[in-house]
Image (tube, rainbow over all chains, first blue to last red; front, side, top):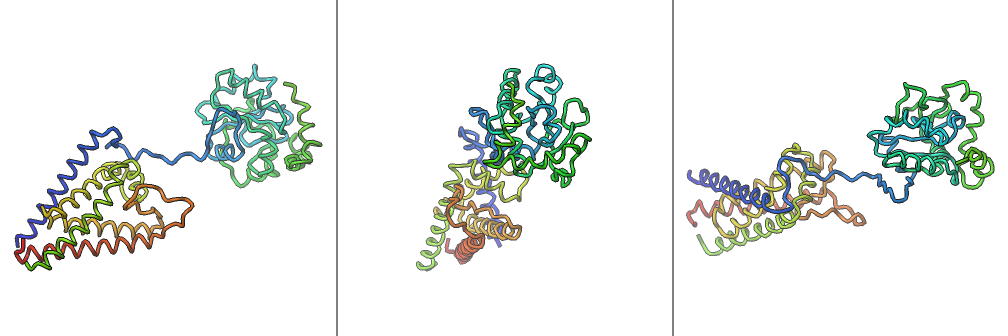
Length: 227
Length: 150
């Protein structure tokens, strides 16, 4: 039967002709697709960072924390840091910036965001630290306003003690995905100091609530806000 | 070949050609968006996504032109039936895999987020109708050729 070879021949002709036109026109048009690459439209990141405001929302910060794309810098004093901090955060009090920044600098490389935080809506430490960082040439610096209170209020992973301090070489430089144990603040005590001060930390979530925070949270913490 | 049979043959080919023209137009204009839709089906390796996204709309256009002009129309009718059959199977497989791809058959625009989402079963049903139309058209065309009509 001659019909089958005829159909096959016509089909191959159509396939070849259409391919010829397709790749020829694609090469000529300005918005043509590259042949060697996959569809180059990755899904846009849910985190939208804008350097204009210099601040980052808690949701965005938490997402960057979970994906390990951010490094958190705790601008509060060493004492407050040891009582509790964002897991994986590095303590960099503003007053120690000049002496400690060079040690910390390598740990900021390769991150999408460097997030400074302190505690209390009016606390200036994080903004002061962010300013120092920008002046030192660090890019993608953001401030998580009222960071510590908000972070605790959402029960995000926290740690106690000196695990993120620059003096500890074993500590990861950036946030790591949380484990079950890490998600429970009560189980994360790692130093005698943090154990001793545990009752004080247990009050911390109350500090993040709207009204009582000022009385025992922000005002107290900002006695350290000398910058 | 009697006149009614010839008219039916032409009408079917014309209808199928219209479907193919309509299907190819948006994809030809927006190859980037169509490539993203092809990728969303998760059936091709990355290296083949762009070549297929470039080629497929032109194949549909060539098939439509061939069907409406009558030139190489037996091959075009058969190839269209095969193509629509493959699309139909792809929709069924995607549905079975739980991939809601929003078809991308006739438009590369993303669905309106506020609108009621269209069920994959609707697309499967629509593709089945188109596959049936293509099969019938190919059968009529090949029968006409077999009878020595053209």
